[in-house]
Amino acid sequence: MVKSKLRIIIVSIFVLSAFLISSGLFFYLELTSFIKNPANPAAIEKKFTVKPGQSLAVVAKNLEKESIISNKTYFKLFTRYKKAGGKLQAGEYILSASKSPEQILEIILQGKVKLYRITLPEGLNIKQVAALVEKASSCDITRFVDLCHNKSFITSLGIKSTTLEGWLFPDTYFFPKHTSCEDIITAMVAHFNKNFTDTWKARAKTLGFSVHDIVTLASIIEKETGDASERPIISSVFHNRLKKKMRLESDPTVIYGIKNFDGNIKRKHLKMVTPYNTYQIKGLPAGPIANPGALSLQAALYPAQTEYLFFVSKKDTTHKFSRTLQEHNQAVRKYQLRKK
Image (cartoon, rainbow, N blue to C red; front, side, top):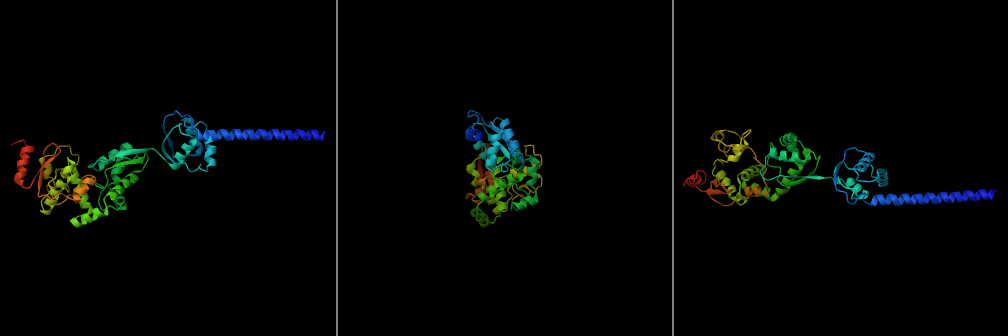
């Protein structure tokens, strides 16, 4: 009787063990399959946001709700097994059920968020740059502009200027959606510093200019240039005028000093005295009037060797350059007044 009961117990334990082992093996295989295989190989990509401080449970629930994974419980178990529950990076991601949960988790752990492209053409001013930034990020235009005029922030970037006009380097940038205005501006200024090399700094010193002076001159060259090949020649005109103590008489500097400019420059504007009106003041204006690119900065540092003192638009993106006022007046009659 005792032996019979013992045999039953042993068999029961054996059966239970076998059941547990088979169940465990089945669970292991199912979990492994879940981890390694996409929920839907044909699925398209979609935006998925992990908010700051969001728990693993919420993230897993949302992933399942968006049909990016098939089982929130398995995803939580795998994430905890990886000891990564507290390492999920907040941000906006582009995910798809065509990726395995293992790949999805790795993307979130590494913070491979969606990047938004911001392309800054040469010659934009602070407000124009701010408008482009606002369209592609969560950085508010007013906040961007205010920071570009914030003395303590400018100083923290190592820039010796009252504004960041001229230091927002034109290029294509990629930022996560919720990048702060401070970080965006810092990246643009850092890119300027990278491009304005020690060789250029030494060249500026040799010419008798500060970096601020060169950026200011380059911004005027940028705004005056229609044909890229003319940059060094336009630069030579301004260098020649500065050497002769002549006023630069550049329309774009006048326009920069006018609030709410309507696009039509008038004679009265040329007579207005502002820190930027180079028809009224001698030398360079108070600061840059736009954000110049590398070619205009280079042109400011390495002007062509000419005797030109004047230029006038030929209305085809190029200019007619002149050495004397008489030649210039003739060019104005020909190209602006259309008189022979």
